[in-house]
Every structure is written in C-alpha cells, then in structure tokens.
Image 1 (cartoon, rainbow, N blue to C red):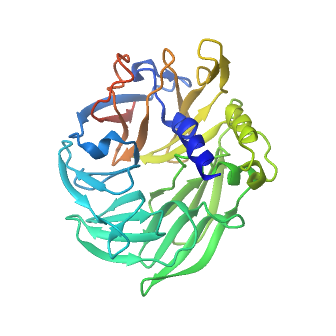
Image 2 (image 1 turned 90 degrees about the vertical axis):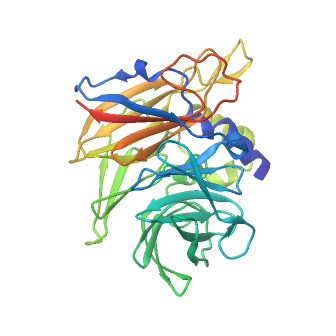
Length: 366
C-alpha cells in the first residue's frame, strides 16, 4: 500500500504541477482584460539538496524564500536574489531536529516547520534558531495556520475528522477543540494525493477547499462565521467514490479514478485577488508511448475579485511533445510565483537535463 501510494504520488500527484507550454500561450477565457504579467525571474543557487523535488515554498516579509524538498532532511532559506542563506533544523528526533519536514511558513520574523514523520510543529527565528515546539498531534495534515494560542489545520489522516480543525496550543501540548465541514468520500479519496490544496489567510479569514470540489470556504476568526461560494465549471468532473479506503487497496481502481478525475490543486491570495488552480481533462492512451499520458489534460487558474466573484479564468496545457515538467505555484506577497527547473517562457529544449530551479514572479493586473 505504501509503495503504491508513493508511485501514485509520483505518477499522478506531480501532474498537477506540470507545465509544458510557455506562459505566453495562456488562454484568457473570459476576456476580462486581466493579465498574468511576468515581472521577474531568477535562479536559486544550486546544491545537492535541490536535485530533488520541492514540496513547499514560502516567502517572508523581506522576500526571503523558504524551500522544503522531498529529500526530507533539510530546509533551506534563500535571499530575494536566490542566494542560499541558511539551513533550518538538524536531522534527528531531538529538540528542533527534523526527519520529514514537508510544510513550512514564514510568519513575520518566525519560521514554522511541520514534520510529517514526528507530527511535530517547530518554530525557529529567521536565523534558524529554535524557539518552541509543539507535539501531541495524532494525525497527518495538509496545511496549518498558527493564530496566537490556536492552530488551524487541514486534517488528512483521520477518516471522520472535519476538513478544517482547530486546536489550542498550551504548555507544548495540543488540545483538540472544534472542526468545520464534513469530509465527503471523494474528499477522503483525494486528500492524500500530493500536492494537496492548502489554506490561505487574508484579513482575519481562513480560506480553504476540498480537492474534489470547486466550493471555496471562508472562516472568520473573529466571529466564527463560516460561509462558502461555489464556482461553476462544466469541465470540472469528479467521479463518485464509494468506500475510498477500500479502493486504495486496489491499485487498478485507484488508477482508473485518477485517469478521469479533475482536482483542485492550489489556493492563493494575490493582492485583492483569490487564485484557485485546478487540473482538468482526462488521461488517454497514447499509441506512441503505449501508456496513459496527460496529452488531453489541462490546468485552469480561476481568478476571483475581492467580493469572491469569478472574474477571469486562464487555461494552459500540461503536456509538451511527450514530455512533462515539474514545478509548483505559490503566493509571493502580492505576486503569484511559479518555480520550476526551466524558464517557462521558453520552449523546452532538453526536458531530461537537470538544471537549477528558476523562480518566476507574476503580477495580476489589467
């Protein structure tokens, strides 16, 4: 089961991050006049750790870049020009040591790291010195947000948990309090496919989604009020799933669902805009490669204004000349960021060549 899950993540999970067509070929579907304009690109200084895949990225107030990769033992901070500054945490099970860090956040002058093996949250200052740790968590999570003495998490490890859960942190212990929005069977099936859609925070509100639905939830931290808005897209299709835990024990059934399912892959706030990324289309059998490929897959970026009105949609393909390219979207203060091993404004030359990561920053504007 574990080996199969890893294979599914490699084969399908990273497809949601794939970009095989240059961004100059984005299709502006609503013709609203909004545009994604590339305003800056730079390389991260290369080292052995970045030969692996990036799993999470966060930008600090001073534009420092926090990078976590699937080598699983190091967290790296870069300056705004892509030069390596420091490593965060040692390797091990001791205080402020990490085994499998997979989520990270810059919050003011602090760095928060979630370790998926130890189910532990470690907090460091911006020099990488440990400040405080919280353990006692019992379940895997897909994202988190610390708010004073509380932490909000997207639970991904418990069948009957809510999507968003709230815990109280005190004395380095974790005390469960309350949860929001029931998990559907479809949500439970997709919640452990990586990359998982995270949460986004703006103006004392937490925004979150299920990977299996275009419904956007917002939770007001001050009033405890939960509301939602649903986007309409006839191309977004998720098959009905019954008993997801049983399906995951049958690899052929998992592959069958993933070949035809759409999935939400990201949620970000960029200035006054909310950006939702999703993968749509179906994998089809390609006679040239004698396997299912993503030739008919495509990605959509849904742009919502400050009133959560859907004002624009951008579309791009996931496949280019039989090759795929891994990368990841992220929020970079008031810009939308994309990091990959290739400058995505260029046509691919040698997709098999290992090259330094390139950070691309886009501005959403008329």
